[in-house]
Image 1: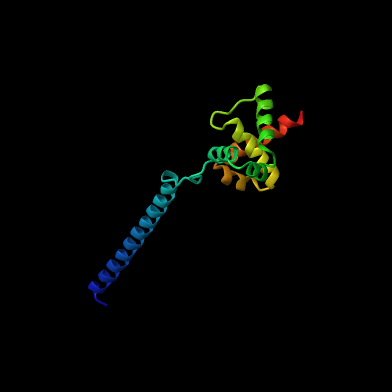
Image 2: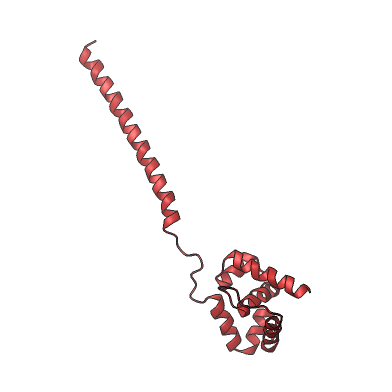
Length: 142
């Protein structure tokens, strides 16, 4: 066997190992980039043109039968509930009006939809939506 043949086989094996290492490093880098991209380039989930507040406003200013169908109460009952809550010292939260909070609660009760479906209707996070529901469950219990 010639010495040159052994050196060529060794070089081919070294080249193969280098290429395999480079491929593994590139795959790891691409995986890291793909993961990091999902953390930094977030697509908003709640991106409907009609926010929960706008939908509540539409219900309050629209046909009277619509608020009854969607929230289970007549417009004057909704207004009376808001007034009672305000008289009891309840106010809006930092980002959600009292009207929208009440609408979230009533809509959840009337439709029986899951919290994630209610979140989608009102374009709110599950935390905000569940706080509204729990707030009114506790408030109306007394």
